[in-house]
Image (cartoon, rainbow, N blue to C red; front, side, top):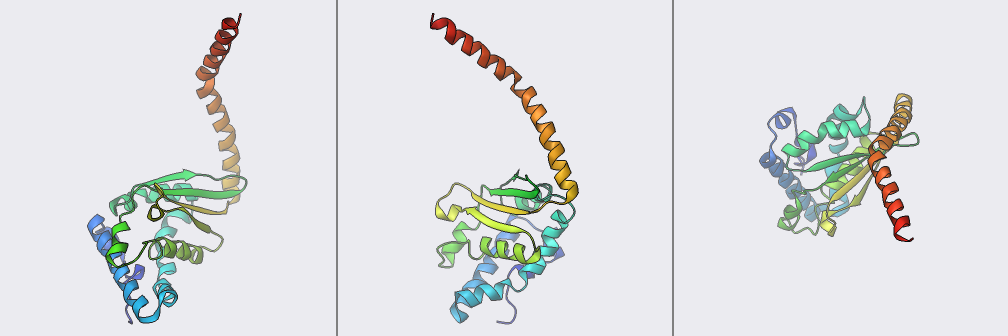
Length: 207
């Protein structure tokens, strides 16, 4: 099987014309290719074969978003293309202590049914696990992990990515942290006043 239809078959024309239908067709092609390879050479070899083009593709695609900014900003900028592909994505910045880190939360998994269509228990091996491995290979220094899976009954799919923060990012984290504390105190002022009133009422009621 010399020409495996997988992540490596996507090109600029595909990106420009991407929609949920085209994305689903692309994913279906990947499942079909994986299933054919599994039948021919087994699961581990099929995974390795499908991965050949993936890191380079991942570098080109995600590099455009995360190479010159924080992971949170990059992933946030990528949300529109995920939305076009049928995903519903949230991004949470969890950077701290010199680490640039983000949570990617997917509320919708558009490929859950495809796994069953091709006789697989879960789509994660073909989609998310390849995604994580490709990211680690494409961006040395990035840690990638799957924290929860809708295929396992979780309400969302959640992924964590982290890497050492650049010096400018570390300083920005410290500045943002101080600024956030000030904003939090301002936002909490009405609640702090309400707590004081509630405590006073409680003291009065006990006399």
